[in-house]
Amino acid sequence: MDAPAVHTRAKRIIVLDTETTGVQRYDRIVTLGAVRLEGNEIGRALHLVFDPRQDSHPQAYAVHGWCDWTTRFQDLFADWAPRIFEWLSWADEIVAHNAAFDMHYVQRELRKAEVGQLSQPAICTMEMSRTKWRGQSAKLDDCLGRVGLRRVGQQHGALEDAVLTAGLLLNITGQNSRLIEMLKTAKRWPGPTNVRLAPPRPDGALPRRAPKRALR
Image (cartoon, rainbow, N blue to C red):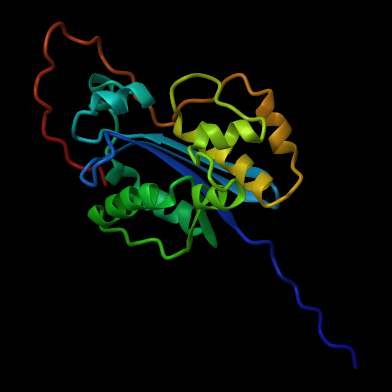
């Protein structure tokens, strides 16, 4: 008698990136971008911007480009936390470049919103890059350059960096994908889907942030 067929599904991978108000452990998420890898191609994407309830460090602002006036009119992370938790829970593994950095902020925001903690293993392409290119820089821009990829502009977008990291992952793991060729010709990236228009910025110093409660 033949053995019953065993059906296995492909591993579910989400690649994510965050842009934050700074690099200290108390800093907050400004934008989150994530993409699902289905096989070796990009599936659904998530791209959101938040009011971090604190100003960005000047160096962080230079990186992500979201000014403190605009962000104070955005949703709180807590408003989207249930959706984010559900969306990320789809994955068997979560991948990021410097995964410890990104996952610290994501897990902390989920904990503050009281929606649970992600339990999947976090895979770090920065560590994978250090193994592949020993003795060379593991910064994302430098790693992308070695595989023929680069950002469209100077500033970092969370969705763009997530997709570029997915391309880097596929290259490091030796998988052929149309994604890599598509990324070489990308001209622009869509902004966050939840962005709210801010009123005209006032002259002079910005007023103090008004209290805000989560909508949910």
